Length: 186
Image: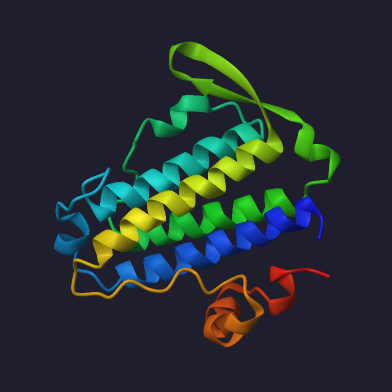
C-alpha cells in the first residue's frame, strides 16, 4: 500500500469515526450536548465544534485557500448535533477528496500554516495530514469519554481497520458509500 492509499484509508476511518460518534450524540438532548463535563473543552458541543474548526483550518492550508486563522472567527459554528453532523460530514468528504487527489510527490509539497501574529510556518503535506488525523483521534477520545457520562453509550471507534471487524462496520460503510475494498486498497 502506498502512503497516499494509507492517507485515503485514514480519511475514510476519520469519516466513519465521526459518523459513529455524531450518530450517538444525535440521541442526546440539547441539554446533555451542552452540559459541562470534565475534559479539555468542557462540553461535547465545544469539543466537537473544535474538531470541525480545526479540520477547516488544516483543509484551508492543504488546499491553499488562504483563510488561515479566519476559520476560527466562530469557534462554535454549530449549535446543534444535527448542524454539526452535516458540517462534519461535508468536511470529512472534503478531506477524503483531497487525499484521493494526492500523488506520492504531493506528500512532500510544502504548505503554509498561519499562526497568531501572522506567523507563517512551512509544513509538508504528509506531516500536516498525519497531525490532522492524530488531532481528530485525540479529541474524539475526549468526546467518547464525555459521552460515557450521559444516557447514551459511546460507540466503538476502533473497529475499522482490521479485516475481522468487517461485519461490525458493514452497515456504517454502506451508509457512508464506502466499500470494504476502499479501506485497504489492493
